[in-house]
Length: 158
Image (cartoon, rainbow, N blue to C red; front, side, top):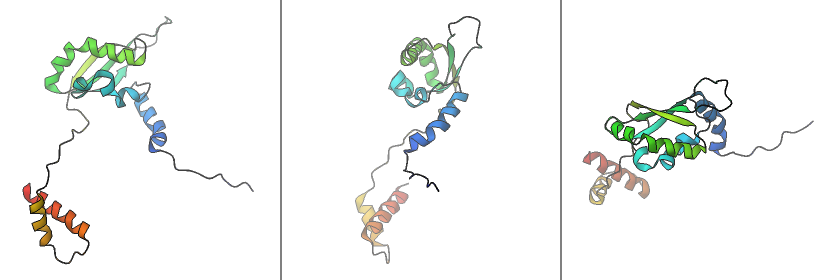
């Protein structure tokens, strides 16, 4: 009887690669890298206000050369005009990333971006955290008492 070989844990990126590749392919992306490396491709200023949604490819024609697609971008409202003026730059950077003229035009869709913006955390007042921790009854673990004190001080501030 043959025993199955040992299985080793695999990185999450490797496990999800097949699933994500199929999902991105439905949106016209040949690879996930255009979405995941968007800030590196177009620059931080443009990437802060836009994100690629999909690439619409034209129907195949009789000619041998593939025709360029249309990149659909989701853009925050006020930045749409600026990105429209920079469309030549965006097209150049995306095509440089692909290594061929993959995208010939941009279509902008004004909508809120799907990714969440990171809100910076405010520092907690250590004196307030110590006062809250002093009122905690029978908690013997000092780390837990300090963490609950910080949580209580943050709740009081908000």
